[in-house]
Amino acid sequence: MCRYILVVLLTAVALSSAGRVQKENIQLPSDALMHRETVKGIFSNSYMAYKAYAWGHDSLLVNSRSYVDDHNGWGATIVDSMSTMWIMGLYTWFDEAVNHTATVNFNQSQTNDVTGLFETTIRYVGGLLSAYELSGKKRQILVDKAEEVTQQMAYAWIGNNAIPYGKVNFATRRPRIEDTSIAGAGTLTLEWSRLSLYTGNDTYRQLAEKAMQHLIHMPSDLPGMLPQMLNPSTGDATNNYVTWGANADSYFEYLIKYARLTNTNDDSYADAWLTAVNSSIETLARRSTVGNWLYIADYDSGNVLHVGSHLACFYGGNWILGEQLRHCSLRRFADGRDSSSGGKLTNNDNIVSMGLNLTDACWNTYASTATGIGPERFAYISSDGGYTSSSPPNADQTAFYNKRGFYITDARYLLRPEVLESNFYAWRATGDVKYWNNAISAVQSFQEYLRTSVAYTEIADVNNRASSRSDEAESFWFAETLKYLYLTFDDPQHISLDDYVFNTEAHPFMAPPATANYGSGSVFPVSD
Ligand SMILES: *[C@@H]1O[C@H](CO)[C@@H](O)[C@H](O)[C@H]1NC(C)=O
Ligand SMILES: *[C@@H]1O[C@H](CO)[C@@H](O)[C@H](O)[C@H]1NC(C)=O
Ligand SMILES: *[C@@H]1O[C@H](CO)[C@@H](O)[C@H](O)[C@H]1NC(C)=O
Ligand SMILES: *[C@@H]1O[C@H](CO)[C@@H](O)[C@H](O)[C@H]1NC(C)=O
Ligand SMILES: *[C@@H]1O[C@H](CO)[C@@H](O)[C@H](O)[C@H]1NC(C)=O
Image 1 (cartoon, rainbow, N blue to C red):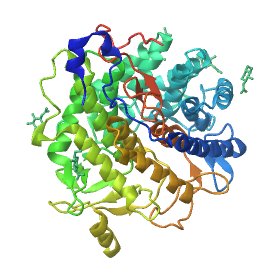
Image 2 (cartoon, protein in one colour):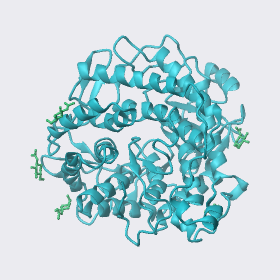
Image 3 (tube, helix red, strand yellow):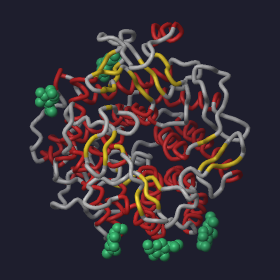
Image 4 (cartoon, protein in one colour):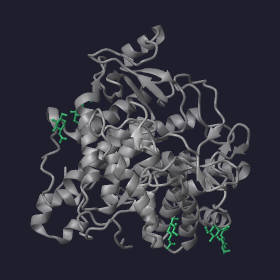
């Protein structure tokens, strides 16, 4: 997959430019521009509706022609759209968004709600800092606003806790005392380390790393696969539920992405990622009895649950990325410190091909429905049965399973990106035209089944062509779903996976040259 060894022999200079995650010389089909313009048109249509009915508020309510402030009222859709607008060349809207954001006071919630660390970090801090980088590091106000909101979030750590509480009251500067999730505590490193880089205040990076290090060293039943929830004051797990889906997902995602973004010589991040993937392969990988589709099951107190979710479907792309990095880019590999070889772990399974298989199974949840769009949750049966902890499939679900190799347990589509995100990684890593065609098919389905006279919106039932339309367009439609689609149709050198690391909200950050040595710290200079 990579040419690392060869490149080393030839020239050290080539190290910073050779393709590693991406396949080299992918040829774009000749209709690429048309597909790109179609996606840009969907974005523009959606953003114009947001401007008309929801400007300055967090999210557009499509059917109501109104808005909802579900992210503290700081204009989440504006900030979340910035990096996509830059990438699509919508520079006037980008400037308008920067101008608006400059007027927002992030010191206080505009809604009297507590502020969630996870959503605020991935959407606002990630959106602001990625926009700062993409637009040439000239708009200092974007860094200032990211710091304004993060200064308040830093009150989520109290006493000697390594783990932050999940929510902070900005008015009292006190956290809400309740259990938090591993995703909540483990999805800060990319954004907070970038903030330290651009402000010179290293406290943000240290706080995020302290939380991540605590998680990495927590004991768990399945090595590396931490349960979802923990208590910040004791630092101990408070449930046994293991999943690559909700409340856990981006902790695993950030382990490998942080190793790449910092190019750190601290192996603990990439090692923890590999341990989690290895446990997943050993204990949680299941093939459906119909179709032989590969899934990673959930797990609770010794029981394997044969369930999947749209959220967890990021794992295909993450496994492809992680394995390519591990073997081609990370310094630990270059130094020969990684003793495992060739991507072969147990069962002779190659993590890249498993990532592709996972992506294909998630795409099958799209290809199998009446709308061509995949559901929020599903389940399946494998050689060890079909236990899910809830009711067994009814007659309709069984009939569907017997044709498709999964059955739907929550039929909504909430404009989520994960399946198309993994499809994007699969396309950039292989150039296999089937991933290109998947993206075209998704765009056609979106135009047909999500469109209203106002904009595009969520639907209640992906397996019903006449499904009712729900009201909200979440900001990740703008930040993630349409960006991954657009970039799938774009020149692979634009936001190359060899040069950028996406945060979990699809905001790209510039990564350092893959094997450069920046010394022992995690904060490094980034060249323009
Ligand atoms: C943004 O603000 C600058 C400075 O006030 C102004 O020159 C520019 O026209 C504004 N851009 C947009 C798109 O509103
Ligand atoms: C926000 O708080 C910071 C200090 O925490 C202060 O420098 C800044 O002026 C405040 N901004 C607003 C708009 O109140
Ligand atoms: C760095 O950030 C932390 C957290 O917001 C803050 O407490 C500290 O005062 C800052 N340090 C400097 C030198 O500004
Ligand atoms: C993978 O898991 C198996 C079983 O738990 C273990 O024996 C093996 O050492 C692990 N390999 C790696 C590379 O972690
Ligand atoms: C899994 O991936 C491998 C390698 O890409 C491929 O040969 C195989 O057909 C895939 N299996 C399934 C069930 O799709």
